[in-house]
Length: 249
Image 1 (spheres, helix red, strand yellow):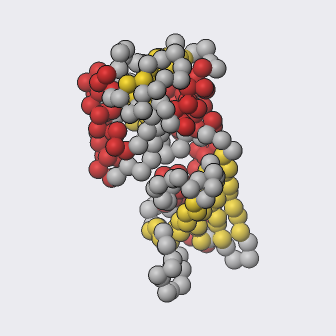
Image 2: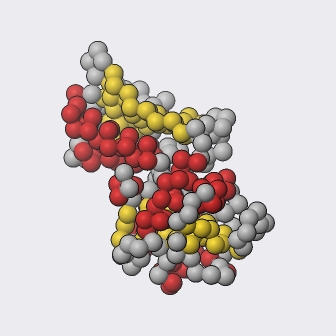
């Protein structure tokens, strides 16, 4: 049995993670962390990790980057593994996450969906086959409450493609001020925000007289919750290190 604490327990993802865990027999939610401490299930919710009444086997974090330092301090001092699914981290915060993974198990990814992580593998294969003969553009769509742009998933896709192409590409996020032709070394990334779109990502390979588009669309946040819970159950018995969805796909 994997005992889970949810950071961001009262958010939409927190509720989805609880619902997912509640349907399984191999894990249970024993506590939550959230500035808004109203309970909605049979586990306590506290404001900070230091106030947790029990030590969980794993913490799942879907809060926001402001929570990172307190979470890492708690996990490092108690040896608690952590699954990090929030986005919008600075380069400095990402470095802290990677440094923590030298001492504790850390599962860190920009997207917990198995489908998205399959899309990453397909995009890498397409880049390997097509090389520099096709232009690459990434379009991501999310709800109107999402703060960061482009999405962490779009960046994850671009990084995976760029690594396949020996990091020969640079990223272009906005073209309205660029009065010039597209360069072959570009990967264009475009963000759309509106309504209640959960998450859609298109990777476009545009060549001479043909276009290949790889797409993924999430219909609900439940797919991300399921991935996070799978990651937590996996991470419980792992040694210190940095893990991602490639260990589950």
